[in-house]
Image 1 (tube, rainbow, N blue to C red):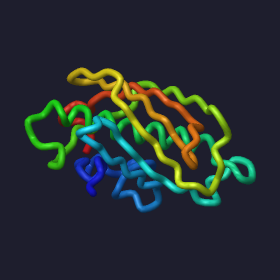
Image 2 (cartoon, rainbow, N blue to C red; image 1 turned 180 degrees about the horizontal axis):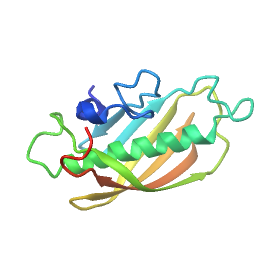
Image 3 (cartoon, helix red, strand yellow; image 1 turned 90 degrees about the vertical axis):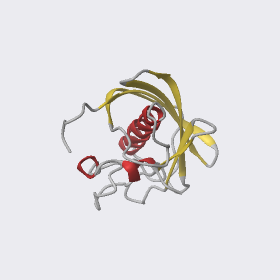
Length: 155
C-alpha cells in the first residue's frame, strides 16, 4: 500500500516527522482511504520516546498529530486535481495552526493509530480532525489548519 508521503516531491520529503528522505526522523506514513475519505497512520514509539516511565512523550504525540494532519490535508487537496489519488505528486501542506488535547496518558508499548478526517476544505486550506488511539483507547485529539505550499516555494 502506498502512503501519502511517498508522493511528496523530493524537496519536501525531509520532514523530521514524516520525511521519507530523513533517516533520523520518525518517518510517519499516512494512508489515505479515498472511499472512506479518512486517513490512517500507525506508529510504534520506541522506549526512548518516554515522558515518564511507561508513557509516551507529549511532544511526539503532537508531532504525530501535526504530520498526520498535513498528510491528510495533502490527500484532500489531491482529490481536487484531475490526476488519480494514487499518482503523484501530492500537493504539500504546512501547518498554520495546531491544537492538541491530551485526554489520557498514552501508554508506551502499543502501536499508536492516528485517524484523520477532513472537517473543511478549500482550494488552499484544509481543516483536519485527528484522533490518536493506543490499544483502541482514544488518548489524544487534535485539530489542525493546514495550507498548501505555494508553487515554486522551497523544494
